[in-house]
Image 1 (spheres, rainbow, N blue to C red):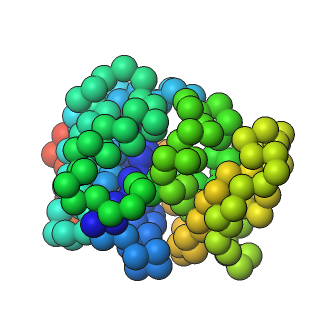
Image 2: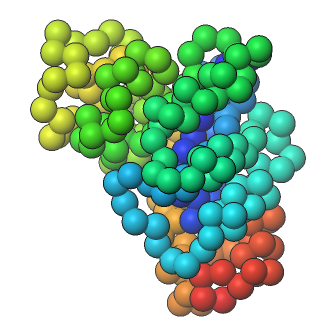
Image 3: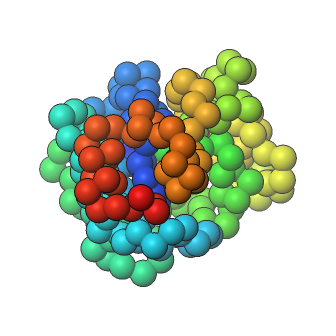
Length: 215
C-alpha cells in the first residue's frame, strides 16, 4: 500500500484539504492519505480556543465515507511539539506490514523557504517522498517531477526557493488552485459570513453542535 501523510492544524479542515488528498491519490497513485492533526506546530501558534480533540473530531468527520482517507491521531496522542520526522518514523513502524515504498509527505510550496528549519530536514528527504502541493501563485505553471538532488543538496539558501530549485528530491502534485484557508473560514464564521460550503457536511454539523469559532 502506498501511503502519504497530510499534516496540518486543521482548524478547521476544509474542502481544499480533501481536494488535495484526492489529487495525491489520483495523480500520484497513492492508496491512502493519512490526515495528521498536529498537537503543537513547531513554527506557529494555533489560533482560536479549539482543542486538539475538536480538531481531530473534525478531521474524522471530514474523511468519513472515503476509504482512501483516514484520520491519524499519533501527534495528538504523542503530545508536545509535532515534528514530521517523528511522525514518519512512527508510521513506518505502524504500517510496516502493508507499506509499499517510502511514505509520502505532502506540504504546500509556501513552506519551502522554511524547510531547512524542519527537524532532520535532510534525513527526512531521504526517508520519505516529499510531495509539493501547488499554491495559488504557483498553480498556473506546469508542474514537473524533480527527483534528483542538486550538487548543493541540503545547503542552498532557501530564500526565494520554489519547486524548480528546491534542493531536495521531490514530486509535484498539480492539485486545483483553491483560494481557501482555515483562517478565512474562522473569520467568516465569527463575522456571520458565508462559509457553509467551504467545509464538508460532517464538519459543518460539528462546528454548529460544539459552537466553535464564535458561533
